[in-house]
Length: 374
Image (cartoon, rainbow, N blue to C red; front, side, top):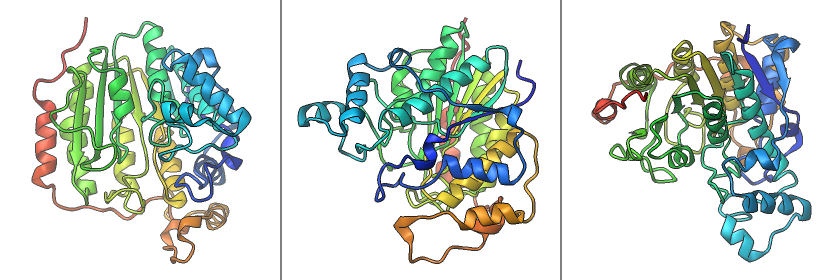
């Protein structure tokens, strides 16, 4: 069993960009890693450099022809119209860029490495993971491959009987749900903004009994996430008695993110992370969405701090503040930046009333709880 939590990342994310005008044309994993180091929160012995998943490893879930097409696209930096349309590459937010194969394959390599490290138990954090929209033979929602699916399959291939997947990204974890629809060995739970792309994940959608969806209204606040955590997520996971938990901790549900209308503080997400510890012998915490570099870096650094039992400082040390002030966001150059983006790790709480829609989602999720498989 791992004696301490392990952090898996890679330097590929420091220079790789989807494009200057793309929502992912910002520093995310590299910024989180730099902030963790500036806080003095990582021992070199607890850091693992991510391998790149091989085509054979990717083909455990993805169509080999699709994997080959992504590789060929990176090599040529172009794709013909028919292949691009078939695989949704070079369109719909899935651009062709310099590392279009290596970057997502590295995220998958990290999740596969995490599953291997967790054979005997422990905790691993891979902030580059969480590409939950990827389909077997198509890119979708900025996701070329689906590393959560590959990690879950790796756990099942090890002989584990039950894996719980919890997704708190602002967008529905559709790719993971589809991959395991009807597979009672995997329980997928997704908290996401109602009516937001990909426009799936309704309360009544159960994917053959293997999914629980908790769509939430705009303005979703910390008190409401706490309610779902205590009255739906934790009871569902605990009742499933999983051998492993995979948590997708996208940062786009935060109030400072431009790609949702949700209003969480990072404290609410850290409490979800804390609640997952101990619910299974194995815990893999992934990243996901997040399109404001300051809120993503602070959130994911705090995820690592939560997993390692650290308390955020009231004010960031000078090196951490300088690092945050050096980040860029080319989509909003002219807008003033709030000082707390540079000086604190924890957001101010965003508490509020727990609305009926949130209570109904929690109640519906617990109806006919998934049975534990033999």
